[in-house]
Length: 372
Ligand code: SAH
Image (cartoon, rainbow, N blue to C red):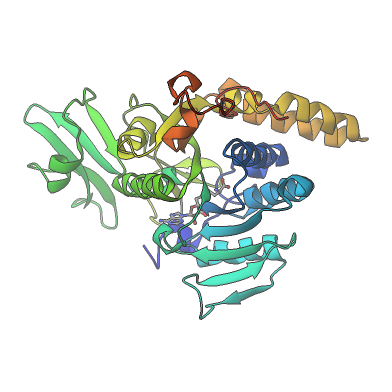
């Protein structure tokens, strides 16, 4: 809802808010993602320009950490023209992002652009804000969606003796101001369109908006090149009833006080893969702890521990590492998934023999990072 929706209205990410995300827990998370983009940029032959496009950037912390890596590796990126494009619907969060990334130096409603706001990052990179991925200019782009797809609305379906029925929200006739779930008495248009013929589960959650966005990402990557990295809690087409709410870091009844709690449903990566429609190759989902291990999180932790003099900082580093990596915490339930142009994954043997180029390195994160 543009007026009463959680993100347009509240959107409390961080310790003082309703839920906490990996980039808010440790700077190492965003740094390793920054390295992922540089590693892919190098593997794809160092194109002279790229756009970093983040969907749902929250407080802007992840982009901030990535831009710090880009600055540290400025000598590698020196000849590349980089710009940042943020897709954000929340007026409140876009203000927080602008303060974090530009120090508040932004221009609202620039006349010459499709963006609703623009500015320059503290590291000198142009940043643009949009409400929809379709407004982002075309061009070679690296996309990022961290805890974005889980925030989009879902349809819920229940298999019954009479076939699939949609789970709908109704006003409880017994208790005033109370909502309840009901099953549709007959099939709805959504039941007919969103359930896959081969579905074996009894209860399914489908996020058509995520499907549309993945189709757009896949078309753009197929046409203009680049890659997309999606990280979220989710599953590979196995889970059923995952819809839940969070308020003040506690589980919250999804139907009570709408608009005041973060509503979320696990991302079905098998559905995202299907929605790429073969326009790009896909990798994953792979568990967060495996992805971060492949990206060299252990080495990065050691360096930070060696460089930190005080016990409190060291304890904080170890605590945040445990949050990200422990299978009981975020290590197993969060997954990484990527869309890449088909030629990026071509096996060297299958290439034209006349082409004598050396084989492309494996995609980092999904394999061990090999940076020369
Ligand atoms: N990536 C951040 C924030 C995740 S919360 C992090 O990991 O910390 C979800 C983000 O998506 C918020 O920034 C929210 O405002 C944004 N968002 C939610 N629905 C959206 C939509 N339909 N289009 C664009 N952004 C959206």
